[in-house]
Structure formats: structure tokens, C-alpha cells
Length: 515
Image 1: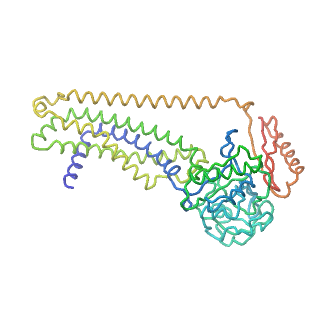
Image 2 (image 1 turned 90 degrees about the horizontal axis):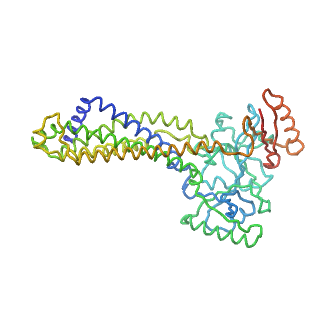
Image 3 (image 1 turned 60 degrees about the vertical axis):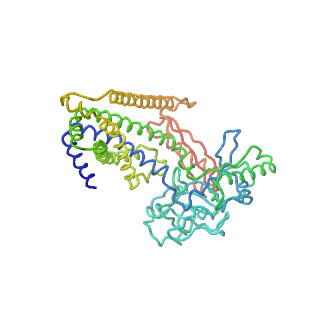
């Protein structure tokens, strides 16, 4: 410990005597380590963070698929879902889900909220308990049953001020009275991709017999001891059995997707590409600093030779130089951490808002540990070459030569040449990758959409409640909307498209505006 303290003190003095080199090295390290830490913060929250459910690795999404048409994750028909649930032996439970929107009125301004109509065992499949109240019972799991609702923690706090007395009271949903029976904890967010649900209701209708009518999502929990591949094999068997029994199911199958993979699958490639890019930047910084250290070694040969002549062992000198490099890297890592905290805010700001885990991105304890380990590894990486070079200093020649001369051998010059070549190679790879990304971006912006999109805007309107159950009422609403929209300044024309029925008492439509 005494020796390490001496090395640290001596290293600080050496760095203080060379402020120009120290400033350049710190800035280089801060940029490389800061960029890597910022990207790792996002990866930690999005790819590495566990989903907030007990034994989340056993949760799977269950999709229908028809490979001949290129459909691999298709929503599920009610009849197939009921057969899967009855015939499988690999799941503890299966739940069905319909994504929708709700019109919440009363207690303030009307509010449209994202929600889901689910089978009663939905929360049991996820393995979560409400923070307040209860979840759905089997008696409520039928169309036309008791109108009950479970709220998200965010909606409960924002709309109702976190009033615990809300449980048991009625709220107006789609102009109907629903009794609030529970509030979920803050950690629950489902689906963990896209817009989060803020309300759940029971009474999902699974009685539709047509197997070609696909309208539900399906989630299941694996039995203890059952592997993912075993579950997939059994579901394939069930799908073949259903295809034999029902001609309209020919070519259809089942695809299981781990819930975590379902969440992060689309973001993983982009994040790994970014991590690879900043990793190359850090490698370039290491190669650059290693070259600078080798150059400084020429000026310190006299010092090293004198210390060796006084009895210092070569391994002791190599350790001293390595300590200086690690000390410099840790200081650079500290500055990089400051840059990373700003970089994280920028990444969150520019990232798509439906990116899973975006709200959990932060410079947390795990990120701090990563930065420290990365800094130490970086210091060793760029300090190893000069440390090894110092162990090969020719003592006699160094003492005889003038302090202004260089006694570095051919091996040192070859190493510096290799490092310079590596820097150029990595920089060229980064430049080529950036060029390809820019070319791809430009090409995507030039894709022919099949229509003139210039100055065309869209808006969506959901018609909810019994007042819009009839088609003529929906048409009347859209005619009035078009009339008012076309009267707005700058609008050339407007057209409406009926999005189809979401459920009894509701539909959705898109309005296209041409300015």
C-alpha cells in the first residue's frame, strides 16, 4: 500500500509538470469514455434492465403466424386462443388482451386514455398485485358482466390526486358508469412497448367463432421447468392439430416470443451499432494516447536510466508508468461521467418517445461502476505499451547520450507505426459507417409513398360510447368535422376514412388535410 501511495503521488507530480499533455489527454479520454458511458446508460435501461414482473423471463407473447404470407407476429383469433388455453400443458396461465382507448369524463375536462380490455387472469399471468384494492374476479370475466375498472398509478395520481377513497366509487368511461376496484403499482407498465395502458376493464368477448377474425393479443407464463423450445414445440403440435380440424387454418401456426425480446427486439440492433461506434472512438483515443506516451518516453529515458542505475527494478518502473496512465484515465473518466450526464439527457430528448425503458435511463450505480471499470481498462490499454517500452531501455546508451537525443529503438518505432495505422483503420471504418448511414437516411426520405405527401397532415378521432354506436351517427360526426376543418384558414381540402369498429359503441377514423 505504501508503494502504491508513492506511485500515485509521483504520478500526480509528473502530470502536474506537463499541463499541456495532461489537458489534451484528459479531453481525449473524457470524450471517449463519456460517449461510451452515455450509450451504455441507454443500453442498461433498455436492453439489460429486467421487466418489472416476478420471473419475467418466463413470460411469452403468443402470436399466430402464416409464413407463406410473411406474417410472423399476427394478432390472435378468439377461437384459437380458447383452444390453445385448453389443450396446452406448458403454460400455467394464458391471458387475452384488446388494446383500445377510453373516453374518461367527469371530475374535470374529458380525457382520452389508452387502455386495454383483458381476461380476468391478466394480472395473475404477469404476477403483479394492486397497490390499492383488487383485480378482476372470474365472475367479472364475461361480456355484459359488472362494469369494473383498474387504473394505472399514473392516471390515479394525475386525474384523481391519488385519492385512496376512489376505490369503490364510480367513474364515467365511454359515457357509462364503471366502478374502480383497484390501482396498480407504479412499476407496472403494459404493454412495455409503445403507449402505456392507463386503464384496464374486464368482460373481454371471446365468443366469436370465426378463426379468421384476428383481434386479440395473447400473453402466457411458462410452467416451472418448461423451456422455451419445449413450449414452442407443443404449440406447433396444437397448431397442426387445429389446421387438420379446421380447413381455414391451413398454413397457420404459432410463434412464441419472450416478452423481453418482444420489448427490445427492434431497438437492440441500433443500440449495439451505436455502442460499437463509440467503442471505436474509445479505441482511437487509446491508440492516440499510447502514441503520445511513447513519444514522452523518449524524453524520460534519462530519468528511467538513472532510477535503474540507482537500483530500481524494471518491473517497478513499468508499474510506475502504468499507475500514471491509470490515474490519468480515472481523471478522464470523471470528466467523461460529467459529459455522459449531459449526453444521456440529449439521447432521451432525441430518441423516439415509444422507446421501451426510456423513462428509466439515468447515470445510476451500475453505470458508475461501468465507468470506473472502463476507465481503469482504458488506462491499462494505453499505458501498457510505454510501460513495456520502459522495461527495454538500454541503460548504458541512455546514460551516455545527451538528454536531448532519443535512444528509442526500432521496435518502439514499429509499435508507434502500428498504432498510427490502427488509428487510421478505425477512423476509416467509422467514416465509412457514417457515410452508409447518411446514404440510407437520404434514401429513406426519397421513398415513393405512392401519393403526394407534401403539405398533407393527418389527425385521428376516436368515437366512443353509446352515442356513436350507429353508423349514421358516426357518419354525421365526420361530415360535421370535415365541414369545420375545411373552413379553417390554409386548408385546401379534407377527407375522412372510417377506421372500423373497435368494439360495440366505438369506432375510429383518420382525417387527411391538404394545405
